[in-house]
Amino acid sequence: MEIIFKIIAIGLITCLATMIVRPIRSDFAVIIGLVGGLIILFMVINYLATIFEVFKEIIGITGLNSNLYTLLLKIIGVGYLIEFTAGICSDTGNSSLGDKVLLGGKIIILVMALPIITNILQIIMELLPT
Image (cartoon, rainbow, N blue to C red):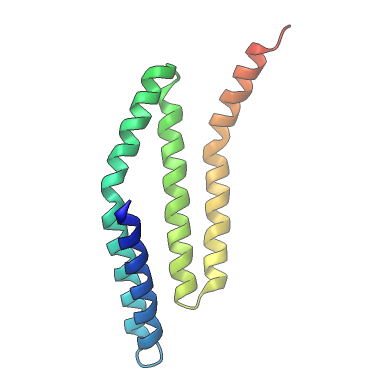
């Protein structure tokens, strides 16, 4: 639980540093923001192993196709990457580009989710009486 306080502290320090540096050197402010974001990402990367272990347990318990879980993890990864990229675009003053990145990401996620939606519909159809 203490890691959340470290993440909050790094986030706030990074924000303050960029606010102070931006009027003087806007290029350094962008670099400070990126470094702060990367530090936070490296702090939480260990938690990814826990997520993968839990998904392996769920696959074993449910007996469902492991490809669906792999696809779900890919969708979540795409969502996080798109959000991170859009945030960087907005931080650099390109909020319009960030909006386009978000739109493109949402469309990609929808396309990636189609096999899951199809599988859910097949399960529902099997459960309905004929």
